[in-house]
Length: 108
Length: 120
Image (tube, rainbow over all chains, first blue to last red; front, side):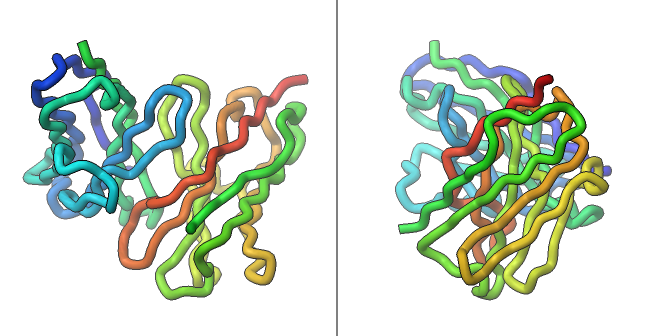
């Protein structure tokens, strides 16, 4: 079955850039979506179809997908960006959504 | 405004069947491409999509849990119901429902979730 791999944790200073990666076999062939989930809150979609932002999501959030790795980039990191970040694809084998294990982003 | 609200028991006993209801508003589950899914999250762990039902009544289940899950819709009530049999303490967690919009394989709007504890 298809698997997504995420680095467990990333630390970043305010104002710097955070890069969160999601790995999978030939991932570039799939649409990757990203959510953030602040502590105790509901997941929020921040990027869909690799590099599209839903309305209301700041331009500081951007995505890319190439080869076996998709990347969510958060520019000018703020304290409020501290959250767990999950990537998600559609597993064509099972025809079912699949989430990565999540990356905890800590703002120093 | 699109909203989804989950309801169901806060606690069930091991081996019991869990029934959760997602009541939604602001969109129609009869619209082409739209779906409603159930996603769970054990405490401190990752998200897992359990089941999804589509506008045409097609259904999708987690391969590892398929034998225990049933998803159904009541279009007239704007509700989606998930049943999960043979509950176990490892099934403890927060259960969310979310909308899958047309043309995108993601969940763009989520409910607040409902916490379910499995304990004797």
